[in-house]
Image 1 (cartoon, one colour):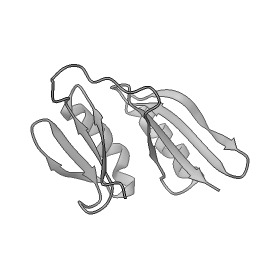
Image 2 (cartoon, one colour; image 1 turned 90 degrees about the horizontal axis):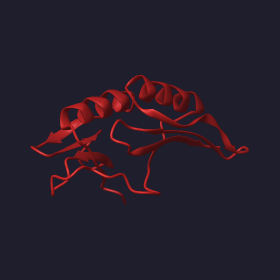
Image 3 (spheres, one colour; image 1 turned 180 degrees about the vertical axis):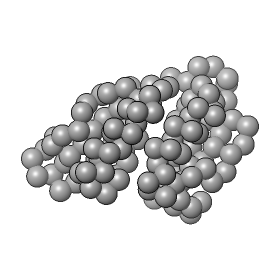
Length: 123
């Protein structure tokens, strides 16, 4: 259903480096890159994350309530992705932990441009 999610960034090279290194364990890489936008994922026919410099060339502004949620496959992987994101310069928005007993385990960060990410595991 979702083709791709786009988030605004200030520095394309920095954003591509952050997301390709962070998402590499899921098999993601830069699939297509143009002047102001790059698509990162496993295949063009699967959901992707796009990073772009806004069309109006003004500063990107993360939306209040907007978030990209990534399921890395296990609670242990949630912990690893959270740690990797922090290592790559993300700020903490909520350390890894059980949010809903026996239902939802998650961790939250903001990337270097302020975009909110969630790493999660259901069950």
